[in-house]
Image (tube, rainbow, N blue to C red; front, side):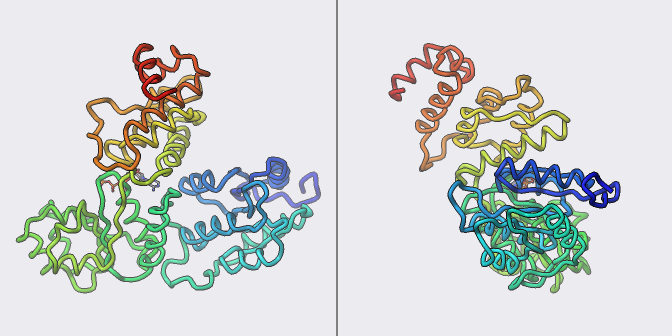
Length: 413
Ligand SMILES: Nc1ncnc2c1ncn2[C@@H]1O[C@H](COP(=O)(O)OP(=O)(O)OP(=O)(O)O)[C@@H](O)[C@H]1O
């Protein structure tokens, strides 16, 4: 027994994710579960929670329903809950309600929460509820299409409307047998979306056939294939090759196809492979996602290299948001990983992650956020970071003091 009279869990304990913005509630809950032999990781905001959920699985998720000061309608928590359940129908979520009341708790149960607990709680009530929820079998949330109900797929991070629309499409078409074509530039996350579609399907337990249509050996695997095939580089085939592929695709095979441009497919092949097309936008066109992904990649790299993840300075975040990343999300991930390795003062500044000039793609015509805006933002953030010490801001930006003064005059800073 633990000091507080509760049975101590088996030495393995549970891995619990606590999504709670109130530091006092977080601390007491953490202590309560640790004393009972469990491990608790804290996320003070849903964005941090999804970064953690992208990295590991939890036996239970304790979710507060309000994150913004003064809000008590539970809408933020319910949105977070729906996103967790859409990504992993087997997730064991217990919601914490305070002012939100019973109506919101019932809504949370309908959205897939296994139980709810009202603040202020008694310690034994909270422990019992979580124990009961962990022990209960998975029950699909109301209105969920049938598909894979048992395991989680990869987490598609991003709060942009475009990423929310992609997650919604994955949730809708993943569990069906429709062929899905995922288009976009290399590095935008197409393979991750493809994996999420497959993970949401009834075929998720089987490893899909992976075919690179540039390889002659891979063509042979098409004969008699069944289940799901992940097809790559179909749009690099010429018209003859595409015609051959159309003829060789077994009728029952579900295709999840990754292309740079679906318009390059012959109409008949496009009808066969693109019942639904999911277009993954460029990172520069998804405002807000880049910074969130950068924080996630910093946490991932921190874990890989066993060091605390350095924080990104405001100037670094402004630069990340305004940069047209060579190689898209992959390019950003690599830049952050490098910066984590080289950071020695616990922070990542703009200078540490700027793509080398040779790597930077040409400006995108019609970018709603012009390069001038980006530069102004970057300079303003660097000045703020360095308390208007021009020499230090110039060093951080990698330009001379003279250049910085000229730019400050130009932008009225
Ligand atoms: N929304 C996202 N959330 C989390 N990680 C992401 C996201 N998008 C991309 N990534 C990560 O970025 C990297 C590149 O993504 P991915 O491999 O899916 O790109 P791709 O478009 O398939 O590129 P390629 O076709 O060149 O392989 C991967 O490590 C992936 O996990």
